[in-house]
Length: 336
Ligand SMILES: [Zn+2]
Ligand SMILES: [Zn+2]
Image (cartoon, rainbow, N blue to C red; front, side, top):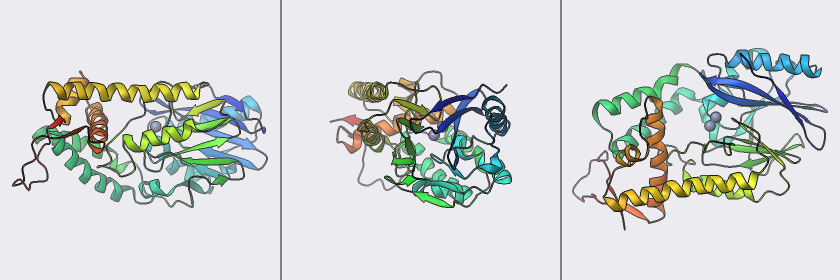
């Protein structure tokens, strides 16, 4: 069952329609359709999985029937992908059959779209090493690696027609703010007093973090800097995320996200003061009852915080042995 489309109108009169899409089973995302004078822009595309494409087309139908807009996917002038996670770009495969609108995104996420399988293999190599160093071995390592590769067949590479950078203005309307951290090429878009925050800032959830050793441009160091950059924006009255609800108090939400990461950092330091631990041991102590893909997400989340603490000189591996040249040895961290 598709949910109802909602509408906001920006100060300069651009209509912003929120199309709710079930991107994974029981996990919803927001696609935005921006309409105005000569503007017909889709922001993200859903996942292309399960009901996603159906919800996307039903969203267009609701915009036509509910608000009298003459819009079909064939009328789109541009598709902006906020970042290269499958729940945001996977719908491009179907959209490409309906529209020739150019795909616009940040250069640092382009390879995921243009070289999907190759990039997945590269990330898998880095993830494998991360898991070994985190203290995951044997059957559990194989299980998590297999899980990571689940999406290998779900997307065929597509060309990306236009790249944008921080500070660019799209169609003399949308200001691009590059916010690496959750994804290397993550962008937010500013339209008058409204911020489309994608997965950089969500109303309830703290966006997933993974260590930079797996994908450069991710990680907590980048993410925190990007939060500071958004906090400096003046005059944002409404923030619309890639998931969850609209945010009216952007500064308060950013403060909440900083505080959440601070709590995790404090907890990790407390656990490491008790005894040296691996990332896997920290994750097991901090997250009980994880199963399936969430185990991998938990390890990445803790891995990102451990990396942050290591980069800033708060912790160090306690078991570095100059004679051990094996790159996959698990690292046991201590506070110093
Ligand atoms: Zn994402
Ligand atoms: Zn997402």
